[in-house]
Image (cartoon, rainbow, N blue to C red):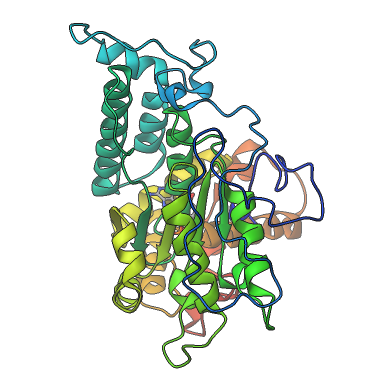
Length: 387
Ligand SMILES: Nc1ncnc2c1ncn2[C@@H]1O[C@H](COP(=O)(O)OP(=O)(O)O)[C@@H](O)[C@H]1O
Ligand SMILES: [Mg+2]
């Protein structure tokens, strides 16, 4: 289970020592004047309080002040003291290279370049966004005011194209630049947000939002929140809460909606509130067979395996066949294929018994793939059915 689902490094309730009173974020924006609670656009909220202003959590644990988004983002390890950076005089100069180096973002960006095969457009978009934020930080150093750039995003693409992986990197990047207080990512789907009964949805959604505050909320297959055929579906209630928080708490929560491009388009068309709140649409194309092959090589290298010379064409053929079969999931299918090949490899060695050397232990042979159902022309590979 390497899906980073719910991988909140801080633990889900890290900043809430308070236990049962869950919608505890019903408080005005800390410090500054309280933002008036927007009239609840939705129906009377059955069973839960009227608390719809998800002001920031008051427990200001380690929250850098606004000015703290200056190059003193916590993860960057630079100073910044209390975060109240001195405002620079109009004639001052800032060293962009130093700011960039201090922020530590280059590490994340080169990490993306090195570890992820292909995705050139995605990488470019992330670099552009990093540049935008780095400049925004510098502008604030001069006291330039204004809303911070809108950061809600949509990541569209087929399964296994790297959306979750990139979102994790993005969360790290935002943290280093000071645009994410905690830098964590929470991955959810409809089931985590929407209840089965009246009164269950609002608390569920609010609970997720509470966990996500200060970080990134990644909503996978976001369009399942909306059911065209049933406008009183509980998903609607969740959508309305999400929309309000995306607006009111845009300084403390970044929402990433992920899923297939065409369904997402339909979803945005039916829910214009989402479309208008999302500033960055990033598309993740399907991988070519050559990219999938390189992805496989990277995975093998990381895990301490390699292909035998004769295995190379067999694996290519495996990919060709697998790509046109049901439930093909790009890089995830590659990973699954390798995992199954490792299983066959181990069983092959055990069955043969006797002496083995390092070479035997690391080398995947053609038969480790030829045993796949893909070559037998049967149904999809078992592992991929779960994707
Ligand atoms: N470009 C890539 N290079 C290397 N590995 C990748 C790439 N894209 C995805 N992967 C791997 O494939 C798997 C599925 O990726 P994931 O980010 O979960 O896809 P998605 O969220 O789009 O379904 C992960 O193990 C990930 O590390
Ligand atoms: Mg995913």
